[in-house]
Structures are given as C-alpha cells and as structure tokens.
Length: 386
Image (cartoon, rainbow, N blue to C red; front, side, top):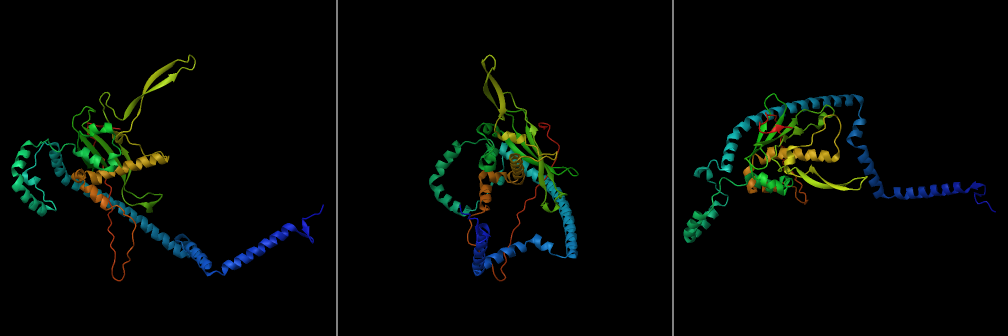
C-alpha cells in the first residue's frame, strides 16, 4: 500500500502548512492595499492607544507624581462638599419651620376644620379673561338656574380623599396600592416631613397622620430615612452629595382581622403513616402599600444583598425621596394633576435632529440637581419604631 504521508521526501502536513502561509500572505497583501481597511485599522489602533488610562501610563514618573497630588486635592474638595451639604441640611431645617404654618393651614382646609376666607379662596387662572367674557354671556341666560343649582349643590366637609387622590394620580405610588388598601388611605389626613435635629446624624422622617379608623389604632405611622453625606473612604471620587443609606419603619397596631399585609390560606396535609388528610390555616405575607412601614434593611454586616433586594431597597429610597422632595411640598398640584403634567414635560422625548450652535452662540445647561435632606427626629408616641 502506497505511503501518502511523504512527497519527494517532504511530509504532507509541512506542504499544507506552507501552502496556507502563502495564501495568508497573499490575503494580507490584498487587505493592506485597501485604503479603507487601512483607515479602519488605524482608527481602531488610535482609539485603543489614546484611552485616558493608557495615556497616563505613558507619562513620566514626575508627572504622575503631580497627578497624584491633584487627586489628594480632589479628595479634600469632596470633604468640603460634604460640609456644604451639611449646611444645606441646616438651611432646609430652618426653612421647614417657615413652611410648616402654611402646611398646617393646608391640613385644616383639607380636613374641613377651618373654612378658607373669600380672599384665601380667590384664584386667577391663566384664561381668566376668556372665562370672564364667556361667563358674562352665559350669566344673562342661566343666572336663575345657577342660583337654584347652587342651593342644591352638595357641600362636603373639607376636600374629601385629598391624599388618597394623590396616591391614585402618581404612578410610583398607585403601583403600591392594592384595592384593599384604598379604604384605609381614605382616612389619611396629612403627610409631614421632619428633619434631624442639629448635631444628630443626617436623616428625615415621613409622618403619615390618620384619623380614627376601623383598621389600626395608630394616629401616626412613621418612616425614617437615614442619610450619609461624606465621601466613601474606598471610593471618595464617587461622592455626589447626600444619599439615603438605610430606613426604619414602625409597628402598625392592627385591629383584629384588619391586617392587610398578611393573608390567611388553607393548606391540606397528608399523614405519612395513616394516610389521613387534614386542613390547616396559616398566614403569609400579602402585597400592600402598608408594607412600606416594614422596609427591607440595608446589610450592615458587610454582606452584600442579592439583586432583587438591592432593587427593592433602591425603589424604597426613591419613593421616600419623592415624598420629601415633591409630594409633600406640592401636594395640591399632585391632587389637581398639574405637577404630574409638569413632570411629564421634562421627560426625555424621542430623539430628533441635533442642532449645532456656531459662532458666539452657546448652549446653557441648567443643573436641576436635587439635594437629599436628612432627619432623625423623635418618633411620635403613637407609632413604635421597629
């Protein structure tokens, strides 16, 4: 049988390798003669060789030493910035005291404890002139009917379901509310924000004030958000201002059979030996807005949370911040929907053509950065801290 592994004394695999090398050289020559391919390769090399980290590595040691000195200065800047936010917190506390009398009067109008005067109730709309002209024409025809209708018009106390309506209007909150939560939230009379006292760790507390109801005995439910306003020792350059790092809820004293955060289920069990079956009942967690007051705790023992827990905690922090920054200060506008329309106007729209400014024209960027407040006040006696 003929041996095909050699040809003229040369191994066949060596011939194959030589043939492949020759083909590769021809292909390389063809590629290198293509200017488009060469340009693409050069661009790729440029992008790799000009990354910031690679550029820093090419600098002399003396220059690197000076860059390290700049980083030391940057860390000191971060610590000064942290002090700035501490003073902002003090300023927020000062102005919170100025806002509070207005918020107290807001509550009185909502609950109907106080009726606003004619002067307090006067409001000029943007379309006031058009409304006035249209009204003058209509009044000549319907004045008698209007008087009769006014006499029969219902006059409920205060503004019914004020805060509950806000919960329905705001997607972030309505997603948390279950159908069985709604009757309870209709008893919500006020939401307050209180900031930590001077010299105390930075935090803020949300207070939810309820009128007497058939569901729990607490008059106030609280949620405390703990803040941190200092650069991380391991990563000081990541500091961007105060951040919520943990939160505490409170114990809700539910009346018998009214706890909506749990549900009772029936489960059948079969005896292994006798084969008999019995039915047992057990309580399991139930979706509810009121789980908001039993928050997941941030890990404080160095162990990292799983991805779902991290997401849950981040969502909780976002809701707390939204209550403090938006809902409480601008409640009436979330009740009417005007604040929601304003928020929608600032959402990122569809991508369109970019317009480049030339010459002396300069674009101005407005920084709409919000600063997270912070507070640890004394807890109301009506709600036991968890």
